[in-house]
Length: 570
Image (cartoon, one colour):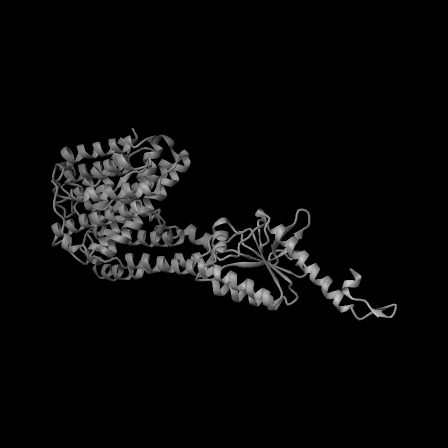
């Protein structure tokens, strides 16, 4: 049942997203057969519905438009679309083989939210030509679309506009009703709309009335074809961007459903499965594919428990391709445009913007940067600029790490916290406790040394320094040299440097420097397994130093006419 339900949804969406990518409708149907079978065999998600999706289709159109005109060179454009599928498939497969799935993590949620919201607006506006019934130059920048549209608005074809607006209204109303009425939850609204408009188009001769229709759709699956390998260099940048976005969208929905069903999805295996979907499909006239949010949700809600549902979906679409494609020829293009507009209308995430305004202005800045760049600079440029800024902020946090001076807020058991956040925290006499909340490596080692030097000037009575390394996940040789230099500096100024709670790999690195001895082996050294033990030792050092100083200060008083030395008092 789940497989058939998803097939009912993917048929109209496949044709609609093919139109969004500027390829023929049958290519969208081809892309819902073989790639779906490949994923069903290799994927780890039991409910992910693979096929043409809005975001990837839009990126395809944006990336290919500069190399071929889909109107005057449809065959060349289709070849480039398949080549793009091959290239992004190779990239995804390579990322899976070499375990590079972590790279996509640099596209943070705010960046993706801003990009998705802007792309949804561009997707909707890209359908103006089909909804209003007149030609518009292809463009993916908001101001250019508006500039092209406004002077031509008087050419609007009234009947086409009516069909488009009624179709959008029907789809939005159906979505709202399906949320409230459980019985209608699986109602195939898009397919129902297509059937009705095909009948109306055929009976009312809408083509004769000037309404643009889909036209001839060949039956049967395509034979294998050769790809335009000479264009690989032209599509390199586009393929990387599309590969990342396609995987992120697919893995996000797969992981969400898997968490609800309490099973695991393997990111590496997902990359391999999605990559091979695109590689194999590219030789059979397929466009780039990914896992879709809407169809996967429908597949899950319809009761899919294994990838067998995907096989049933592919088999059903195959029957449509083999025997039923002529039935879609009278379909008005405005209906496909309406399906796209309705599908992306939920992608503009205003709530996320409001949430970040209250919680994290820096993430809001990233979101708005991605949003603005995508709208006004370009789709691919927008995601690359925003991703670059996101990486810069990550590096900034690593290079300028957070740290805190700790004070004691409880005696039994001893608890130490940031004195800036806990006003009642008390500094330990003669002891400076500092916690570093980042890896210590080449990029921040000098800054850490400068910070420690500054703190020792702020606290000149410090006798012992305790560095809490519980949050130091990694230390390279440069960081270890910085620690070694800090210990030597403390010795020159007659201060004791102690280190607590550094993990095993950090102690190993310092051990290779000859300075990582801990109390676990009962040997002498500055490293302790717990902060409590390190502070206790630091107190003893500070107190002994104080006793020595007091003894020295009192060495000139007389008892029975002679000077009493520290040795005498002992």
